Length: 151
Image (cartoon, rainbow, N blue to C red):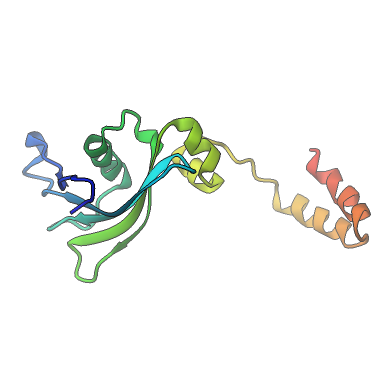
C-alpha cells in the first residue's frame, strides 16, 4: 500500500476486460522531494496472467492516482519482473511541471520521452577529433579538438 493514504490503483476498462487482465499499482517509499520539485516512489505492479505492463499505461494509472494533468511529467524506469512473473517493481518520478522535468531529468530520459533531440556526431568525426587532441596538452588540446565540434 502506498503512503499518504493512497489506495492501490487498478486499471478497469470495461471494453478491454476480456483481452487485458486487471493490473494493480502499489506505491511505497513515497518521498516528496522539494529541491528537485518532484514526488518519487517505488512502484509495485501486480499483473497476473500478463507478461508485462507498458510504461505508458503505468504513467496513465499514476496520473489518475496522483491527480496529474500532464503524463509527460511522469517518468518510470528500472522495472524488474519478479521470478515467475505476475509482479514487477520499478521507480517512478512525478515532477510538479514540465519545466522542472526538463531541468532535472537526465538527457537520455528526456530523449526517451521525446522531449529533446540529441544530435549524434558521426563516428569518423569523433575519432578524428580524438586523434587531433592527442598531439597537444592542456588548453591547446581543447583548441585542437574544437575544430570538429563547430560543424
